[in-house]
Image 1: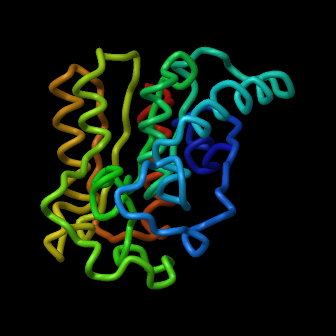
Image 2 (image 1 turned 180 degrees about the horizontal axis):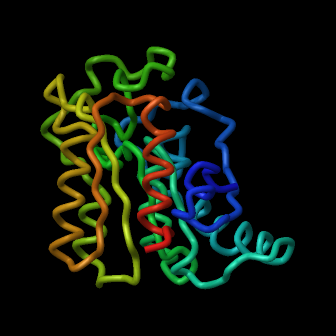
Length: 225
């Protein structure tokens, strides 16, 4: 499904969309300090898990193409998400640019890395059930896992839309939050020669802002120019 207002104004052609939900959620997360992203709950299952990006590229997309009349060029396919899903979208694009030629991230959790803050979101996520606590803040470890991935890999046929809120800043000294880490990723991608659409909205980590940036991102990546 495409944003109806954008489509009606001929800013973007109609495109089907498919949503993937991690039904284990934050509350069922097992906090394991310095664990790999392959175990645990949402931040690990969504972020950089090989099984997840393989499923999207080798199972879900082929199934969609079998059952629906959709474009097959990677330049017309977007992988996107918000928060941990935005981080995961960038990782999926990195691993499967032959399938997904566009990455759309809304408030992506690019501060994350397997070792940073125990590899979990901790007190920054209100739906975490209180897990993590203030002791998970750790500026001695480094975040920005995705920045390191794009730095060490050759340039790929990818385009990016990155959005972050003015209020998504590091208030606790945890080594950077969403706004800072998104800017950092943006600068690295631009230095590598990627096309990046960056948008900073006046807002926080909430769906009220994301419903607008979703439309903006689709228009930027797939719009009629």
